[in-house]
Image (cartoon, rainbow, N blue to C red; front, side, top):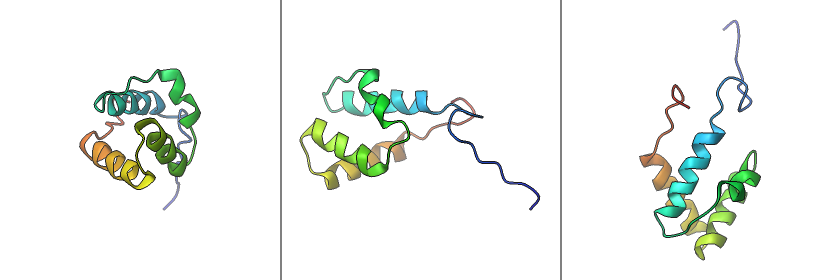
Length: 83
């Protein structure tokens, strides 16, 4: 191997916008309206922080939030060529 490319999000592909849209859809599907600005703090955060945020907004356990998020993102794959 001669080279490895690391994409610090936004350098080669800005996928954050797509993930914000998906998180907004995730909450909308569960009857919770959320502003894009409310999601800005999730940029670069840990998955634990994401799960705790989801749990608090949906009033569910962190474990349930993890399961819901996993299922949602398995069914809503990000196409990085379009991101």
